[in-house]
Amino acid sequence: MSIGSAEKSGVSGRHSIVMQDCASISVTGVTDVDSFDERQVKLFTECGEMVIHGENLHVNEMSVEVGNVSVEGEISALVYGDKAAKKHRSFISKLLR
Image (cartoon, rainbow, N blue to C red; front, side):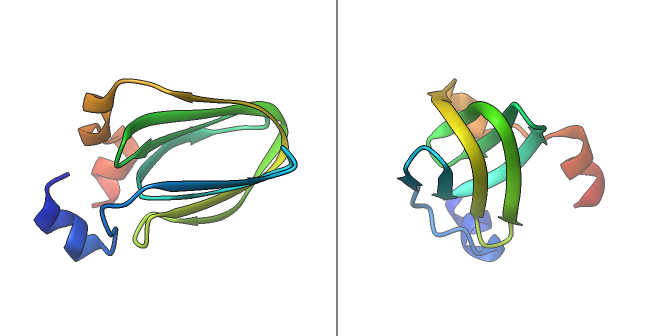
């Protein structure tokens, strides 16, 4: 995602994480949400691919236009992947754009 398209979509180009008691997490700088279920949420952020692992995960808020995602559940791990993956877009997001 180029800086120009980040400004147009509302994503500020910054990425941050706030986690409370391993039970909820808020992520900013989200450029795309690839998939989510009760055990895993896969995102693309300004810093690359990010996967949230846990049990009973529930996406409370998802605004890719603004770049925010909020997840609740028993969070057991946060894993960053390939930084180049931040330019990847899921098949569904390509269809919706």
